[in-house]
Image (cartoon, rainbow, N blue to C red; front, side, top):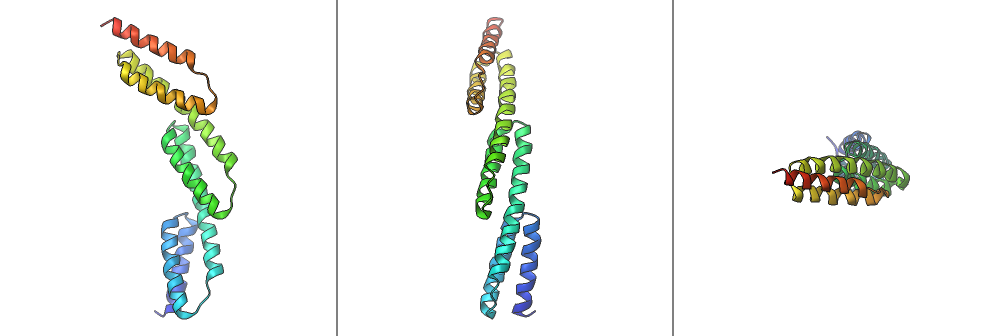
Length: 168
C-alpha cells in the first residue's frame, strides 16, 4: 500500500469514527493521516477540518443524550460529567448548547432531589441519622441549584429518624 493509499484509508476510517461520534479513534486516524500526508506533500487540512467538525458535532449529540438519560434517573453527579464533555465538544465546533445544558441540569437536579430524599427517608426509617443527613445534604445542594425549597420535606424526614430511634 502506498502512502497516498494509507492517507485515503485513514481519512475514510476517521470519517466513519467521526460519524459515530467516536472522537478518540477519529483523532488517532487523523493524526496518522496527517503524518503520511506530510511525507507525500498532500494538503488534507480542509478534509481534516470537515471530519473533526462532523466528529465533535456527533459527540455533542451523544454526550447530551447520555446526560439526559442520567438526568432522568436522578444521577446528577454523572450527568454533570457528560454535560462537561458536551460543552467541551460543542466549544470545539462553535456550537452554543447553553440552553440545552440548562434544561438537562434542571431536570437532573429536580429528579436527583427526589431520589436523594427517598433514600434519606429509608435511612431515617432505619434510625440511621448519619446516613440520612448525608443524603439530605446532597438533596439540599441539588435543590439550591434549581431554587427548590425542600425545608418542610427535610424537617419531616428528620422527624422520622427521631421516631425510629425512639422506638428502639
